[in-house]
Image (cartoon, rainbow, N blue to C red; front, top):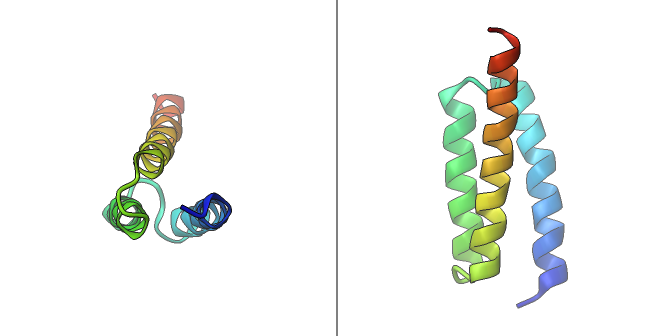
Length: 75
């Protein structure tokens, strides 16, 4: 596996994630649908390599934490 290519794509994914969050908002179905679809696509692209799956899961968990912090501020 080309780890450098993968982590370049991870950085690009994070940038695109920020763009999607700004465009759709983190509370939108469009945003979370994109997150789930794109993480699955990334995992499939790299043959569902364990490192790739764990990295993408970690990124989804990170987004969920951000989402939860945003919701807790409003309470």
